[in-house]
Picture 1 (cartoon, helix red, strand yellow):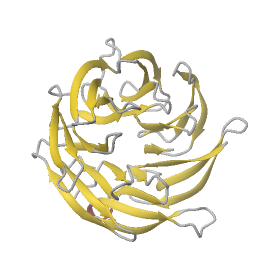
Picture 2 (cartoon, helix red, strand yellow; picture 1 turned 45 degrees about the horizontal axis):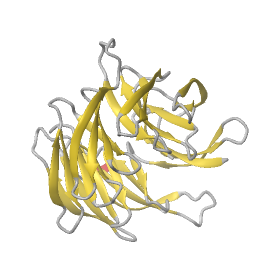
Picture 3 (cartoon, one colour; picture 1 turned 135 degrees about the vertical axis):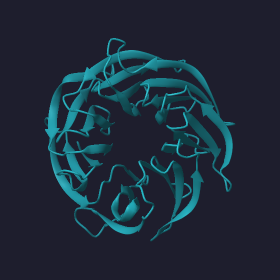
Amino acid sequence: MSEKIYLSGYTKRSNTGIHCVKLDCHEGISVDEIWSVAEENPTYICFSIDRKKMFSISSRDGGGVVYYKLDTDSDLEKYIEIDSVTGFGKAPCHIYFDDERSLLYSSNYHLGRLDIFKVENESIHLFKTFQYEMPISRCHMAILDPSNKFLIVVNLGMDEVYIYRVDEDFRLVGVNKCLNGMGPRHIVFSKDGSFAYLLGELDFHIDILSFDSANGEMLLIDRIKTVPDSFKGANSSSAIRLSNDGRFIYVSNRGYNSISVYAVLDDGGLEFVQSLMTRGRIPRDFNFNADGTLLIVGFQDDDYVDIYRVDRNSGKLVDNIEKSLDYSEIVCVVS
């Protein structure tokens, strides 16, 4: 089986931008770079569902977003830049593409706001901005719920999650207030959309939330810690992912450099499975390959990317590294 994996991150040391690698799992694991795109600090990338559009964060020209399209005339099927919107003063930290409405949601941590861009065939332009209270606001993620009816905006600085009904006015229909100091960073939903798992960067907990897709109501059910009580050092949690089959939740911890694994129970609760210490420092982002048998982990402070085997029955990561890729400062992994 051969598939494409995309890696991007900071370009402060040796990284040059966005990389597309071919992951081949026919016999063992082999990895070859297909193409790369030079970009300045592309710390997050995302794609349209059909993969004909790619979007990247960039810190060039004051920071903003870049729109690429797939060059089907190239044998490599490489992406070429179509348009960009920059000059905001600070680059965003997360982007998410809404295929149905052709909107790009851009969360800007430093400016404390959410920018929404309209994507046309050959252009991208600013459509709407939600500016939250400064200097407290730290907007960290905005995604759609599985029903595609609600925009979920995670604000780390405000310790809040905003729920907007996605219509012409983007009406605010609810606010989930987190514990003070949680620092909510990223959120994922269960396969059926009835539960959400909100990761706290600052207190390294997961809030388990029920979610009503009829009205956008979000209610706290339980909280669990992502590092052992015995750990007393500095830590911040970074990424949270749902396994391809929806049976497990994975979390990366920075400081207590590890990937924590939890089984998703029938009632939406989480049961601890494993905490695997990573070889690299600051495991910022990770993702699964197409069939969920491999986990690709990027490290912000090391010059490689590691691949772990996943036991799909237990959810556990095999405690050995199948392959190490020579890429530095990788903070976004897309499969």
